[in-house]
Image (cartoon, rainbow, N blue to C red; front, side, top):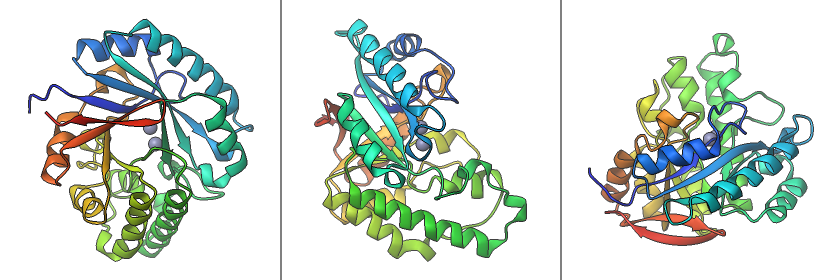
Amino acid sequence: MGYKNRLDLHAHTDNSFDGKHSAIFLCETAAEKGLRAVAFTDHVEMDFFREQNFDRTALQSYFELVKARSAFRGKLVVCAGVELGEPTYNLPEAEALIHQYSYDIVIGSIHNLRGKKDFWFLPYNEYDDSHIAALLREYFDELLLLAQWGKFDTLAHLTYPLRYICGEHGFTVNLTDYAQQIDAVLEAAAKNNLALEINTSGLRQKLGQPMPSEFFVRRFKQLGGKKITIGSDAHFAEHLGMGIEQGMDLALRCGFTHLTLFQGREPVQIEIC
Ligand SMILES: [Zn+2]
Ligand SMILES: [Zn+2]
């Protein structure tokens, strides 16, 4: 505890449908909390890119983040980022988007399976354990495709469905049943030189642990992973920076001595201290 190099590389402004505060207000909060850097990564869901106007969201978010980054220069490192949801479901537009804007960091995420709703909104009361197992197998297959595509910087919240499956709906899942699939994802991420994100939102939610848990951060290291990012996935100013120090403890325990910051999509290694 008591780290000086606290970086929060996953946070949402009010340009995300579930975000509440402006970029400028969040920057003020991050500076007050003594964070060294913050990355704002508003949702751009590629499978609903035009249908739900994420093309406009991307433009608005990027414009405001560049403004905030410049307003806080010298006081706080602000990274203009994006959380690219399901890019593998719409590769041409995903690839066009990451070339259209000069992002500092691109986060790769899967929030829903093809043709299905976000794991948040699935009808869990209609599901039994075999449905859950099928969903998770498909989720890890999609993550493998995402990691193999690899044109992003950090792989977000591996095990995201557990937030809902276990945290909110009380199913018991034994991830050793998916160990081979998860290893394949981690190996592909390491091979493509991606960072693995330790998403600390689970620590403050019913799940009670980061996504992924320590076991898989350690496994990533064993499989050749070199870069780690930590993000609170804050959607409110109050949550900014939450769990970052626990994430740093965890990274150190797994053998990582540095966190990775991204500026202009180039990795910058920052010592965990
Ligand atoms: Zn996400
Ligand atoms: Zn997020």
